Image (cartoon, rainbow, N blue to C red; front, side, top):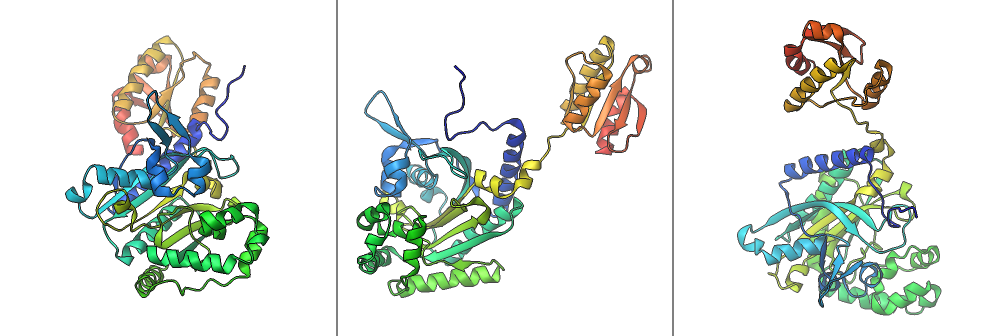
Length: 416
């Protein structure tokens, strides 16, 4: 029986793995510039963590958690997102006592047991950040700016930034009542799933992808009467800061996000090329989550970007070619012996290089050199052995020269 990767997962082969590495390298450079520090958490947690943080009525908890059973009574779940894990670690290790205001980033795999489709896998990767310990609206603007900075650094164009103001916990409660009152006489026109959501999580109706539901929502007016003055002022400062940073955005009153812990500012970055699953990433403020998990009463804001979706949105990213500095071509056993020593002396100097181990012909070795993307070819034959030299060929210009073996490292360093 032929075995294959589980449905909804994929093998990241060397060519694509290089792309992931480049995205991660760029991300780390940008996070450093914003003074964020990496925090790595386990890929699985106690299932109760996600039930308490994401909300019992969310689609993730009800349908998408991938659970793990241990021999005992413990029940774990592969992490569907990282915010809950970051907050758990923050509380567990008393980081509020050690670090005070804290800024973290993470890069890694997430898991959701859902129907695989374009832009939606069961194992996927997030690049994200969390800033904990401040209610300052300029922090909201910083996280949005940071997410946009990352997306643009990955060469993605044509995205749309949508933002909205959910208000504080009391505002959300008032909004929930207002929505139910507004939708009560129309709910029969919505899909079966939305009719279920009406009682258990009315906000999720606003995020429905069903076209008929979208049309029904266009018929209702969502005013900000439920938002208190403090939250309105907070959101006004966020908007002003984004305008001053020259960041284009749209206010979307239907943007609620799918997780219960969000308050005040929420945002989503979309790209039309992705179809119905059009979000490149999203985030927002969560001012009550830390205290709900037994930690101090601290405000926080964060976001996550989907790596696979960003790759779909920018096909050019996938055109990245692997390449090395030098490729050794050896023409006999003595040449191979010498080439192997020189090869590894270059590697000791962190000069990327390789050689053919198959005893192939000159023509075949040249094909291997071209395939490797090598900038230089180093040829060693009978004549080079006699004169203790190598022939160095520049693959871009075609020029070649003989140099002494002991000068090879310095010559390559000068050329690269």
